[in-house]
Length: 68
Image 1 (tube, one colour):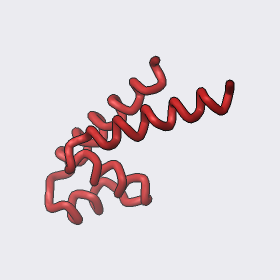
Image 2 (cartoon, rainbow, N blue to C red):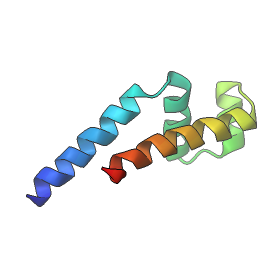
Image 3 (tube, rainbow, N blue to C red):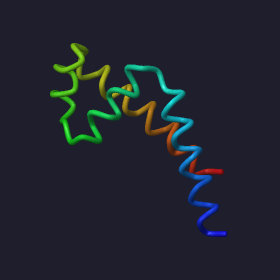
Image 4 (spheres, one colour):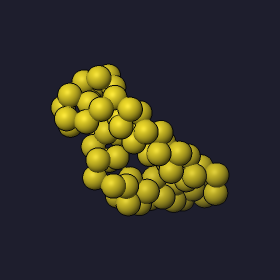
């Protein structure tokens, strides 16, 4: 039962990540790799504000997987 719940949560998280816009997904992956906001901004050639907004959106969507 516990294993099924973990599998379900993992599948929800994966589905949410797959549904993210490409930029949001890239920002999330780069942050998970340990890059700082400034490094992500430079790598993707976007502003720091765009990185912050992207990560905020992504994390809010991921949090919904745990609200269910």
